[in-house]
Amino acid sequence: MNKFYRPFMFTIVIFAIGFFVDALKQPVDWSAFDMSFVLIVLVCVISETNYRFSQSSIKHSLTAPLTLFLIFYKPLLLCYFGVLIFETIGKVVSVKREGGSNHILDEKWLFNVAQFILLIALSKYYIAQLTILPTVEFITHLMILVFAYNLINTLLTHLVISLHNNTNHFKRGIIRNFIAYSFSYFIIVMALIFTYEAYNLFGLIVISIFVLQTQGSALTSLTAKELNQRLSVDKMTNAFNRNFFDEVVELNLIRKKPFSILFIDLDDFKLVNDAYGHVIGDALLIDFVAIIKSLLRRENRVFRYGGDEFCIIFDNMEQAESVRKRLEAFVFMFQDEKSETMIYYHISLGLYDYTADSDITYNELIHQVDQNMYDDKRRKKEKEKTETVFELL
View (cartoon, rainbow, N blue to C red):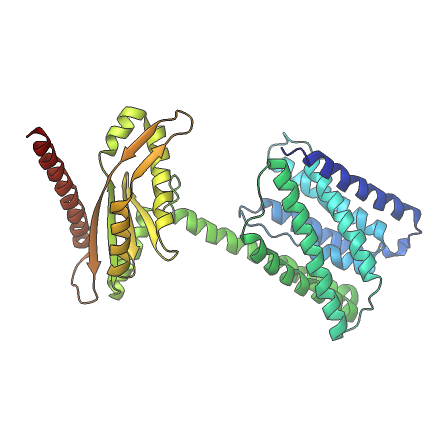
């Protein structure tokens, strides 16, 4: 935990309490506590529940655009109460799902509520200067509001995670996700406002159903995509697995698509496991795949064929030859940080180029590239023997 985490949390909470107390002092039009308010809070609860129950690592909550809609039509205090309701219920759902071992009103809940209060207060100040009209000027201001809201939300969230974990949580994908989410939030807020203006509660019900359906579809799509990726990736090394390799090669053969395969085998890897144990051996394989990936282009893929055997598929022989030469010149070394064990190891390579006019089956292709790899292994052993003989002479 970073030393600035506690001061940062304290500052956020103090500001949130100040805004909440200030809202308590202002007169509230309780007639705004109507079915539209209840509906939006209910949709927020459902959206937050869907978000927390989702198995996808890329989760998509819609409480931000729904909260922005509330800010346009409801007093500050009601907006704050709405946040307290759906954040608390969402936290209860999470705790129940995890077995009830965690506290409901923990630091995460406190930060989420405080963050929403700050965002609501700042957004209310901006919205107070706008008049809801179907004009380009209003739409432009709405877009600025949504993007600013999401920007502050994103920065605060990633900052508190970075401080809590004492790591840099601002990854490269943050910009892409920020733009995508901001644009979708803008569309949802605009649809909510103009539908409500035109059809009142009935229109709000219809658009709310559409919003929840959209979120469900997005989460399902993300989960299916990630599930497919998990099924095609070797869990330990993070290389693609044998099943996916078979699919790619067989599909290329069916389509008569030219490609090249580089087969890689770690020499005498069994000796590493016997001497240092499987934990060190697994760590070495993970490190080896990371090295291979660093030498490849983005479009090239490395597959774990089995055990200590790996394959790389290239679009053409030129790319394959280039990587083969780099691998032959590379000095492979692995150092275990805990035991400070240093292991130098070697690899054998087998290369095969498939052309569209080649008449070869999958098994024949694998046999050929495997044979080429063993030829390379034999040549190296013969070379070692020759060098040993010369040394003795």
